[in-house]
Picture (cartoon, rainbow, N blue to C red):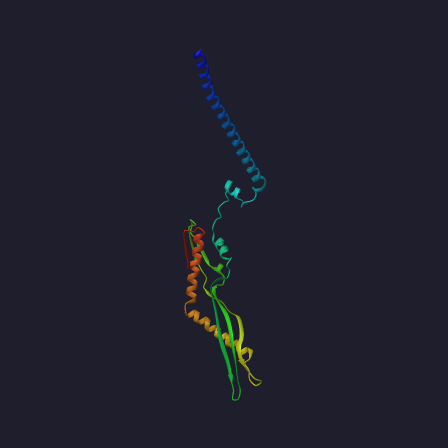
Length: 224
């Protein structure tokens, strides 16, 4: 009797773990099947959205992943087109201010005017699209010959009469003030040119353009 009972218990013990294992296995299978179904639905929805809304848009990220846009051929015209955004390429700006005095004297009377003014001198390239561009056959090297750097402008931005003395017999005329300011303005410009403004501005332009196109992907950039 004991053997029979012991055998029965052994059967129960042996069968219980196996049933539990089968339950766990079936649960994992059901979870796995649900994940597969969800992924399949997601892929179907993704492709449906692509074909319905995004297929004809070349700049959308899904189009670029599925069918990358063809690489744009870099040409001299394309380089000039990029440079045309600058058009007038201002490399250097110098702000200056000065006080000038205009005096007039006679036997009995005298007059003077003291004027304070400010101006801006701009140096650069008037039209950078006039540059010469050469690209190597393998597209790795770019050569650019820039137009000459020049003074683009020297304008008075503000002026005011600081002090003046005049009378009914003698005064400083407005044109005399303009002539004096123009004379001092040109002197400031000549001083900058003497100090090497043009050469310094061209060197700076070379550095800017070289760095620009190295960043754009060229392996070698030569700017003259």
